[in-house]
Image (cartoon, rainbow, N blue to C red; front, side, top):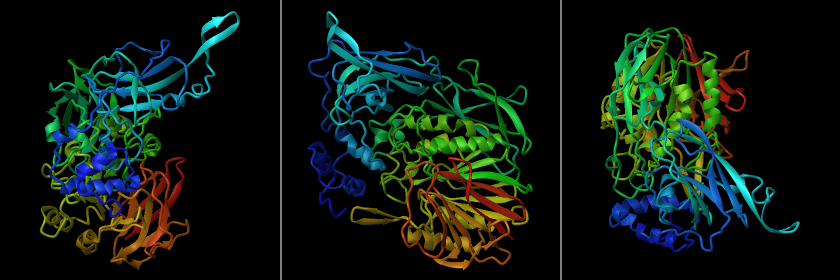
Length: 633
């Protein structure tokens, strides 16, 4: 921060527009956060007017150049489209194709949007356009392009070719995001693009299709399940299940005006995409740990195919199997460039789907930093489509993270711009959890022999706060005869061996005030294990309190660390933020409370009965166990 001595956000943006190199790009995010918070002089309307220049067609256009698509539409809900560019005279590694989702496009150049990318934490090289392309690819991804190995003669004398051209083909996987899709072919790379060709818009066959169902628990009985899905239609739809029973949906949505606007943000600017409508229906009268067939939609918009879900075990049941991870995000199966790609996410969700196929999962906990859409709203659709093979079959329970909630002057405890202006609105709409009230995203649920207390590290947790009082009461009322295991879940960790160094500034991964306030509650109420995300790796502690090991595990005959909590001392802390985001390493000399550290993509699989709580960290690449520990009491 000290390396960039500018007085306010306007000077920062002006410097970007002037192509001045002020400081290393890695330190721009913290500077932007503080400048945005302190400057009230630049509102969103002024930001929108900064340095937009219309992109014209490239000078001296090539007369041979064409762009064709493999379909004229309409598009199915999931469809691959091949884009072929032909007639290129001089291939360049700066040539690219963007996919645009809005019904009307603004292809003006907006260098100032670089600040909005950085605001969310994404410092990748991305297109600086006033309308964000939801995905893009460079033509050089076709290996024949730069070498021009697929030549086409355009002008010939006798047997000699005087002019030959090159071509390339790219394949994009498109999903139904309700609005027309256009392809635009650019030269000049992401920083100084100019338009070479545009396609006609492709419509989706059914913009109102019911899509991307995901489930959540409504209580601890195992007798009800909530089904949530998206559609372009606001008309009431339904879930049909168990051979003809039907439950109507409630319908909700959110608008651009619902996003945060204290400072400029993607969610209120070029990242906005209409979410359509979110439908939700609660099915009751079910049996715990049982499977049911269902479908959702209506005769008007159409019906999904038949799907199967499994209800979770009821509170007090003998056994439970769950998956826990954080910080997943999304990546696209077609390897497109998108805002904030999380490279490990596809492998992790595929591995969990295989666990589910084998009957080894009753529910999933995704504990913060869910989609990393961070104000680029179409990316919520991409994420929901990606997790559907798991989330449509078992409860997909979540905790809120900084990239869903945090924004200056929005009521979040931490005033960073990490949510890109979303302020938790899309998160709470897409993922209705059994919470008490809007913007109070903390809750508890009992599954089998386990009580889960889920907090929000992004809302006020100080001793006089509403959340703190709720936490004390929830932990106090746990019935250890019914649910002998008490598991605490939140996004930001209390123990981590990662210290993020950005330029000359060091950012600790742990807030000592948070630890001092919440950790005593965990010990007082004998929490067995605390699971955290936020840091992008896997780490396990001893039974620790106030930075000191209170007890150590013992190796058993099967080489599994076993913590005996018959005489309770303190919880085991486990960081599980390795489900997709680019991985963090560890400092060279970790504290003695840190027992296991793994920087690899994966997830944790938990098996619990009333006598034993077993946690296995699994590599998503091969399903092998990288760490295992159990607790007995």
